[in-house]
Image (cartoon, rainbow, N blue to C red; front, side, top):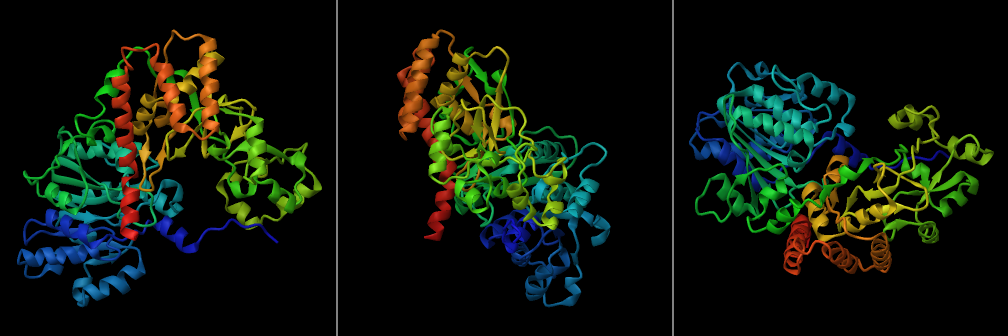
Length: 563
């Protein structure tokens, strides 16, 4: 029987097409912001469930427009969008001619007539470059640039929708979009925002603290672009909205609102915090003892197997499939296997005893056996040929492990990152970053770096640099992980470092994360009393607790709506 890689068909289609229908409440607010005259023409480039179109009709009726449907146009690829949603909303076949069944990225402005639009509004598809179909990638590549600008090649599909839409807009026109948090966190999002800032008189972002869409871990940002005209250099504005009331005030620029826009800094989280937050952190960050992780080490992704369910297995699975023990070697696939500040052989023995998947199937030439050949023969030819990663390897059965790292850093986590020294010469999968210390970084210095990473100061830095998702998880891409700041005092002996390292390692293995962090704070602060006084530590801990509560806020909001 062939071994398969399971994934729900409906989940796969939804992920590949980026289908997330918009709640009606937010549609009403954005329609009111976007439509300012009964004569406006408006485009919805991915109308889907038609909630925006319904809101736009009500807005035009409110402004006493005589024929609202004559002023609305739209585009969508889904047959359901036309047969189920649009047909119920617009009974007239004449008016439905304004709506095109096509990929918006392949549509040009002339498709809707020669007159441009005063407003564009929508919730574009959220599809990562990795999950795009080839036809989507080709369409994106064809429209993702003009004479002065080019979108990064690996941008999410939504970024191409936003950029392409500018071509449909009249001078002084405006756009309102519901976008994922990657608009603030991903490199392609920041590049696009900078270009929008140049093309519009005003660009503002409202960061919603409620998670709007089921099926995506990302939070939601409202992007507002007003008065299209070139060569501007205004700052992008950003504000938090705790609910629809706050959101309405911000959209209306209500002076009575308790929330305000602030300039968007390099890291959005800093811009969204009240001025009293992070004062102590910013002061300490200017200390000469502060470095970034990339100053002392190089980071890379872990081993890409192409199918962890095939290559990363448990002892029980190996036994049931007849895989010999000599064809198995430990690999770090989940950060919880490493219970302290060092990854030890005893950690793998403990994990194996718990039945965790922490063994890599090693199909190199000297381990290949009849049993192993039989195991891999169960993988269908269709699955092998359809796997892009397999196609890149000389032997699809042998993942390239690369050089054994000096340490590991989690890619995603809920409580904050931990730097784990590699004491058993193993490797990790791409769920965990690999870290290689710079030449000359001694073992005591490596231990000091691991200690400092657990300090409250560095945990705040990790919150600022990382990407926060609606599920409450904090994620660090390589560049973001390298930007985490560390305090590295120079006046600590190798013996004192070893003692503190051992103590923290023991506390982590005992499940006392808070105690381990306190020891790290005291150890780092003992030689930097001017920077890390008790008062400073109290303020840092308060701010870290706030940042973590804020990161988990969307998750709590989602749970409260479900209860």
